[in-house]
Every structure is written in C-alpha cells, then in structure tokens.
Image (cartoon, rainbow, N blue to C red):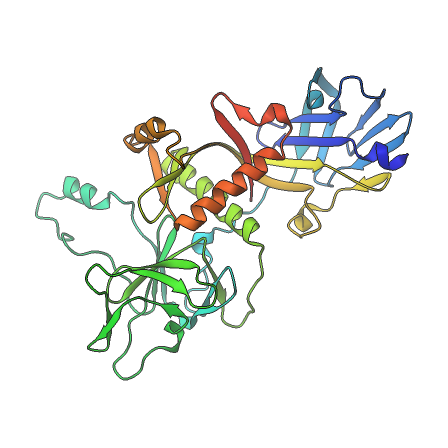
Length: 389
C-alpha cells in the first residue's frame, strides 16, 4: 500500500533569481483518491487512505509554506500550486570552452564517445578565445587604412589552442622526419606532401575517430584542425579519462554554450546546424536559473533526494540545475519558413556541430520534453525542454 502511495508524481521547478517555485503533484486522474498535502520548508508530505509519502528536499532548498497560492487541478497533471522558494545553490559553470585551462601544462585530448587518445601530452602555452565571426568586417569599419588582417586567417601555432563558439582549433603539424604519434588515432582523409598534411582537392576533410568512427571535427588547413566541443574531452595529462554518459555530456555542453553566448552577446535565439549547412533545430533560451526536482517512481514509503553535488550520478536523477528552452525540429522539411526567417535575422546566432550530434541533441530534447507534465510540454507553437547543466 505504501508503494502505491509513493508512485504519486512530484515535479518542482524553482527559479533561483525569482525565488519562486511551481509544484505539481497528485494523481493525473481527477477521480483519484483523496489526498492530504502538507508542505514544510524542507519537505513535502502526501497522505492518502493507502498510506503516507514524505519527500525531503535538498538542504540548499527551502520552501515558504505560507506563500502557497493558485491551487488548481489540471487534467493530465494533477494539482498545481505556486509558492516562494529560497535556494542557496548557485551552480559554478565550468565552461567547456575553457576546459583547456591548464595552459602552460600538458594536456591530452580524448574522444568523448570511446575514450580514444586523439592528441597525447600536448603542451599548451596559449589558450585564447577567437573573435566573433564578423570580426573582419568590424576591423574594416574601425581602420582608416587597408585592413592589415586581410587574407590572414587566424591559425594556432604548435602550442596554441584557439577557442570558438563550439570548437577548438589546434595545430597538428608534422615535423620533418618526426611524425607526431598523437595524430595516429585520427583519420585525416588527406595525402602527405613534403612531410605536411595537404588536403586533396575536393577531398573529405572530416576528422574521424579510428576506434568508434565518430566525426570529431574537420581539417581547416594543412596544419590546423577543428575539433568540436561536443566530441572531445581535454584533461591534464597526469589525470585519467573521465567517463561521462553521452547524453549528459551533450546536454551540459550545449546548455553552457547557450548561457555563455546569451550573456556575452545578448542573444537568446539559436539555430543548430550540421557541418553540411542544414539547420536541424531552432532553440530559444527562456531561462538559465532553473532547479528541477522530480520524483517519478519509488518503491519505498520515504524517499530523500540526494545532495545536489551528487545529482549527476547515474542513480541520482532527482535534483538538477538546468536551462529551459523552446525548440522546433527542422528535419524532414519541417518549419522551413520559420527556419528561413531565423537564418536571415541578425539577432539569431548559429551553432555548427556534426550532423550526428545535431540529431542526438534533437532526440535528447524530445525525450526531456516527454518527461515533463503534459501541461508544460508546449508554449505557443514551440515545444519545451530542460537541458541539464
């Protein structure tokens, strides 16, 4: 009987900046059993004729029971109510663009999907952000003399790593007579000429992991290679490879990318496009201060939520920081008009990823959307999803 009571769904979305929370709980069917709900600053308690379920919130979260308002039943969801909430938890973003932070040290580049070493023990002396994609036009506006950077693309030297919106640029030059062993796990699809990697005319420039055949990036020039941040993990050479579930890694990278770009460029709409130039997803960032707590099932009478710092473990999926996005899929000729209007809008920022990763992200968004209470899955013509940080 306790197990039946524990199956009651609990969904709580907290907004850290607004100090507010939306709580959804109870049975989805209006004719469900009677329920007595008690809310304390640190817990939720639900009593039914079949038993009692008590759910403890993370220590960093405190509710204000006296602020409860807007109680209503929503068919398909259960009981909705809003209340004030306080949380001391503020996630510290570790940018995937600056995971190369141990400059002056030795780093190893791994394939995120399988852990294959792509670049071994590379000493990075400079880790620098690249300017925006329109930097050349801006220089032309600022300079009263001929552009000194005309026809001079920014390419990293041997111990450099340049960081773009969704990629790293590194130098994979082969020294004469001493080919670098770290380049061997990568298929370059190029031919060797004068001991340098030279792309064949109209050749496939994709960089592919030899072990798992995942597209890691592409060759930009005879010496420069672009690696996408969703495909590569960079670790200090004296540490081991960190195994992160693929879905969790992609969500975290994209979420942090959206937060950084929205803050730096005041843009909140993004197109996700593949290497082939096709737009796969339209994304609209709603907020980046959400803390989601949910309990979908339990076999015990009392269930305590894990600490937030443990929420990224495989068996701890109840409390997590997230960004809330609206999205529209653009595959199979869907939303062509909307995608075209977004592409021509200068306030929309484009993010380029491997085509397979674009499809992965779309599957992640669809799955996360399906896990929300039905009333929260759509907003106007867009679908809603949370991406875990």
